[in-house]
Image (cartoon, rainbow, N blue to C red):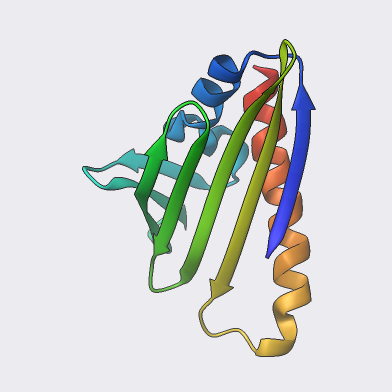
Length: 130
């Protein structure tokens, strides 16, 4: 599991709105598009016709403070939680994510965590800065 924490000069509502704009996540994830669904969204990562879908179901949604996603894909599985809390006129963001990638050996967990931390930090920082 990884945890990313940020304190930002945004109201809780503004930070929440930016972080839960699911389609905008694709701006910060290479080779990925996002399509909204009735249950949540599907992130499609591909080069040409070669790629995979990462379906995510929103299983808890309590704006503007908490959201839990379940990753239901054949390639990427796991969960993510987003906590946004007010700190004076600012906000504290805590993003927790646990990812399992199919067909990878157990010893690659450290690499998966490192890549995930870097990727999700980029997403969070990008969404919060725009």
